Length: 616
Image (cartoon, rainbow, N blue to C red; front, top):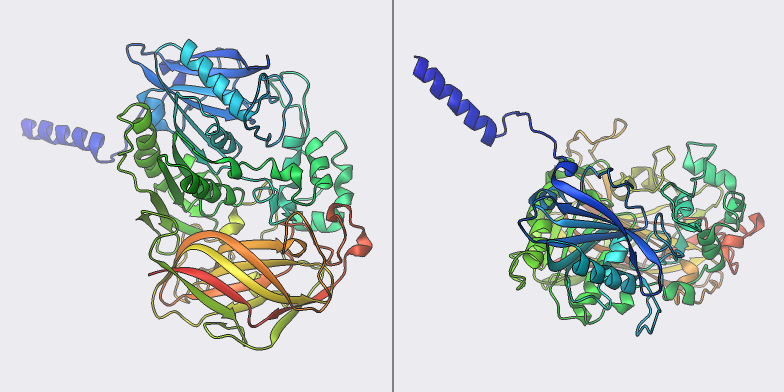
């Protein structure tokens, strides 16, 4: 009997170690496994950039270097202060890599002057510098001065560090072998602060982060976020009135606020800060990562992958999951965006099986491109499953056109006449029914749109219940034919998945909602009407004249399942996600007066179309 007890005890110990029984595990201590040094690396013009280097204590091996360049601080500062985690994920951290963080020029402990989205300089001479040269000079120093390195370097980053990751591909150092731009900014006139010329008012508070310059290295914030008198952002911005009234919060010392106001159009200032157009003849391996519900940087990742694919002959793959901004770097078990749940361990699985595989292959392995990873790995946000393709958009898609027809129908037959609505800047359509003050918006990307569909200033066009699954893969292009009684207007298009009545709630469903008849926003976009023909040359509408306005929505991969409906919503305000259009043409909306804001009637003609890419 005693031996049986020992056998059972042994079996339980084995099971607890191997099959998920609760067990005590010691948290990973970076300080126990890594040494840390802080250095100032001198750039070609003499400016020193603060750089923190974490090296594995096991010096019997050689390691590649994984680097991130950031404007958000390489904290904590001090040789005895360590990050709780280093590297892109815990798997790469625990297996051992030399991990480097650098404050970019003009930020935190680095010297120099910061330039928001610093322009790239081709064919640099002498001491000319940009972020590409700063990256090159840093890598050159690291491979020559850091011990126990195998001479290979990888770079990763999310959001702004994703932009610096993309930048490293230009004039790249020979030691740079693998780069993963993630949620990477591609162009500030289409990412983050602008969408097709409309100013993202919801990012206004972030202006403090980028607009205040410093004169010397600092280890503590030199900027301060604005304290606002309300917790209701809709009411705060409505009460604030025209954008010029926000000047009292940001004075001339906020360089970025001044730049936004002085450059309302896509002029040379913004054009030269774009990085997409420079992605040619790229040599390092690239893995672009993005979230299909990233409210901040969705344009950048798609454009980065597509431009490299067209203009280079390197290893170049793309991963898009059902994530909001940076979700893939987190470890939350249940992956959801707002009310919509997509599955368990999606981020952890990406980190372990995709991200780690990519970097290990090119930095520790054969580096021959045979990673076993698909060219395109993208999540079907309707079926809630991963799919793989050899190209993007998939080779098997075909274009299908739907009309915004009579009787609120989304139809394959053109209609006659028009639908109209009155747009009042004093009563704009909210982008969310949540009452709160957000730093940057995220959840709205999958929010229930019933509240909007029930407003008289939102037009709704939808199919009948689908009799079979319909998978849309790639871009959505709306070709509106409109007219307005005013001389300017914004046009917002939303693609919505209308759930059936028997849809069940999940633990993410907000208390005041039901998933029955849920109107899930799949994709949305705005076009500031003045830019309908040219982003650099705004022009007014001619009142009451039928006019074409085309709106490209960012790519999707979503199955509208049998029993669901495909819905399109059209509106002209989306507040305070974007600022209010006066609906009277003025040269610069940042300087519009209260009297410029007028109520207008807008028409959408029934020969307007939405073009989908349908997966066969």
